[in-house]
Length: 280
Ligand SMILES: [Fe+2]
Ligand SMILES: [Fe+2]
Image (tube, rainbow, N blue to C red; front, top):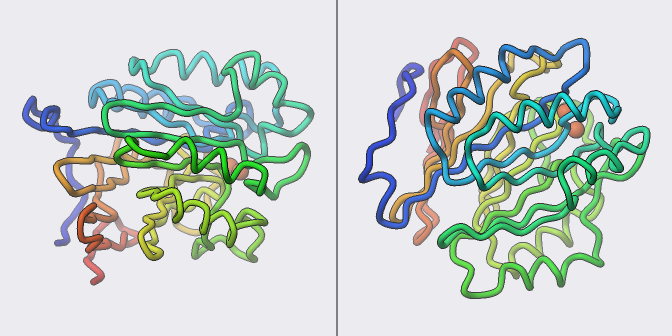
């Protein structure tokens, strides 16, 4: 399936029932920096509130330097999100200058578990103070597996850094240092979907039973190549999952669709001008 960008659809009542779940993922807000564009974030939040998702995930880099006033700005924006199920983790920028102290004051634990219906979200802080690289750490593998134990249904794991290399992000230094072991941990845990951010380049992979989806930056002009500010919407409906990339003010396009039963998938490649084509 291909086509041009489509307008944002309203969500029907039938789409809300039957075990359906909608997750909005925003990432890399970068409040306080010279490339932060408040109107993009305001628009994205307005679109998300119109969508009324079941869960909203913010996958790190809320700030630029981890400063208190940047955190306060990020908190003020996130407070406008109407969804009661909000998951927030820090990114590498948030852990600069001891910024994780402000994170804990304003957002609570840096690691969290959320269960909404059949969906379980486990989100971890992959950042390390004053370093750009990240890791999960073998000390957390057992805890992660325990959180995803039955009766967890659809399992979503969230981290800021990449789990797999993402094309168009330059020299590889963005995946967590323990990616191999972490991937095995997530496979053992039966994770269905991994959501991350970090380098502002949206992408999607399938690796064995795992779908790994990266978000772009929602509100920063720190863009690589021809990428554009965007965020993700994940629709889980009756055995299949659609992941949409949304551009604030500019509609959406589907980036991947997969079956939770057979793991068959269709991936859609965005073109620079916004058209999408199917890649089988
Ligand atoms: Fe970032
Ligand atoms: Fe980052």
